[in-house]
Length: 592
Image (cartoon, rainbow, N blue to C red):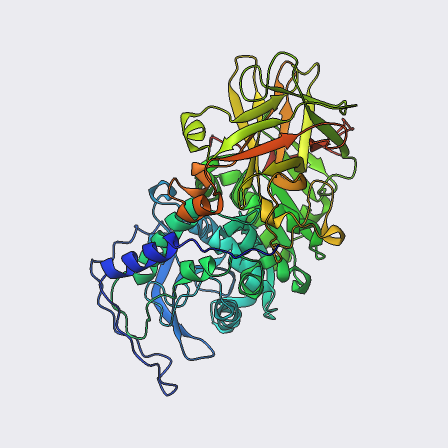
């Protein structure tokens, strides 16, 4: 049965409220006869407060660059005081460029890169605020094709400037990183390499993980970005931003809207070297690590320490990390033979051992893909202590399934597991590195439901460190086998089909990749639920409507016919290829 899909209107309301709260921007038709050096008129609401420039750096502020459609983009150009022609690094996003030199703890939007460090090493750093944001003209529209083209035009404009030697690279975190895939896919001739940090490649699977709308992040980020787009106030030729949150809500299936905006659809077009940098468990690592094997150009991967929310602080403030980034640029933009490409392709930091290790590829070729089965516990059900079991031994006969009632928000908000399973204490350390998945055989009595699977490390003291989240909406269970890989079931998210009540289906759930060693005496922990306020906010009315009739019942089966299990990438010991040397070996969190 095909489903009638409902849309979540939370984002639309937030967008409309946000626009209403901010002073309106003027709407001006941009004439093709405008002079390139004509400065658009602006009426900032507040004075512009810039951070003091460090010694040796000079700033050309708010320089306007004319795009192919005559829209003017505002850029800040940070240059060495000594005149000359330098390789140049471009960073672009909708985030306020005037904030980028303040301490990164101030806001997560400070993500353009370490300007003082780049300039001190003989680079020009150009920070652009993309069309329709800040002092730039045009309309902001969330990674639309015009942004990709603007990136091309900016790269080629930079290469013609008297302070540039014709070699251009890109860097930046989050939006500053994601846009690099899209610009590189345009193939500007003077773009020689990119260095994306925490740069997701799949807008649909970031917005709708497992086909389930992630209202918590998008409503927060979308509102903040709209305010940044409208900042600093009226600007001649700047239009109100497109209602991109409503656009996302209006596109609940993967398709052209997301393909235009996603890096994974451009990877095969990239012809320049890529330095990919990510941290375990981040919002971006899912897509970035899934796409990394598809990059066919010279490439490097750094899997960095896990700073959580403060990943941008690591990017801006870690001197060893920035030394490595400059080493990358020195090789590709200055032609320095510094040996960076002689080292193994992948360097991974293992938080539980506090060690760096080189590997030849990702995912690791020596991965031992191992199933860990959900099992009944003779001591009790999975609904409460001591919970169900996880075992390498598959069930050989019948076992009682585990059921819970939905919606289960009260249990989730109380912090209690809805249903959970764990191994006995491990007898030896177990290294789990790479993509992973969970396969649940389940049924529901409601119109639709979502499976949230949380993987954790339960210590001897009973505390759980959560490592990975997998989500799958039942109606999106279809798998495209040709695009699936171990630990990475590929759901097209194109043809939703409602589950029949009480019918058992196989749900293959992709989970976030991890780089973690479970220590001897610890337990592998999996808890399953159908609500997650941290992911979707407590206000998710449309999902509640999809979970009718109330109350519902979800059931997880784990018998010989329905062997629910985890698929984990166990990494056996192997001799080290070579020691990881500075500066990479010195990258740590917290910062030293």
